Length: 259
Image 1 (tube, helix red, strand yellow):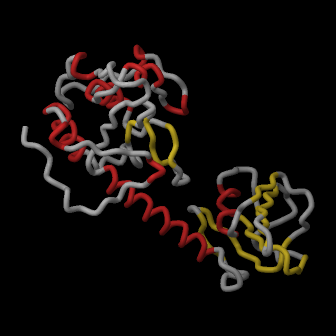
Image 2 (cartoon, rainbow, N blue to C red):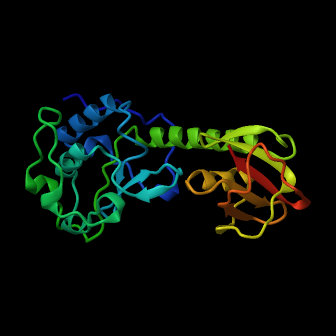
């Protein structure tokens, strides 16, 4: 098979947080080149979410809905076994491989690939490099992963910007805005009673981020965010509504009322 196109003139888009190394294309086996080509064709598949890489510690990592790098399996289940069969890694990496939600996944529970999707697995002697120190598994990251991570990061930052604009004070005061696909009414320096919150979150820097936490909780119907400190309070009460003007006026809190 023809090797992947040379991307040496492309800018480096890797991030330290990924601890990701990209092997020289010349070091990849024909089967790995074929796998890369197959995955390149599948890169627009909506089921392939976020970044995908196998770390030196033998753990798959992906980008979750909150745009955080997490230990997980972002591949579709039927490709997990296929990928593990085609990645050179040491025996320790196999032993400590973890699946979805960080749970240890016995080898016999790995999924089998769909027929006719991928080439046959590498022979065992070519796949495992047990002579390498434990934990130093060779990373096989597909060449487009860094680009997809950059795109995902950009889309994430764009979504955060839109959320911040939707919940910006004072420009959004009394207006409605959509935050993480949920509509809120924004009140600046006007809110309900600050007592009786169900959850308190610290180090939350914007009203948008505070409202986003409320969106992720079905019971939450409004959120207060401190104007001069990074505290977010989430509330569950029947005494509020997006059509009702909050009765407390102060320069300490801004509010987002779920519609």
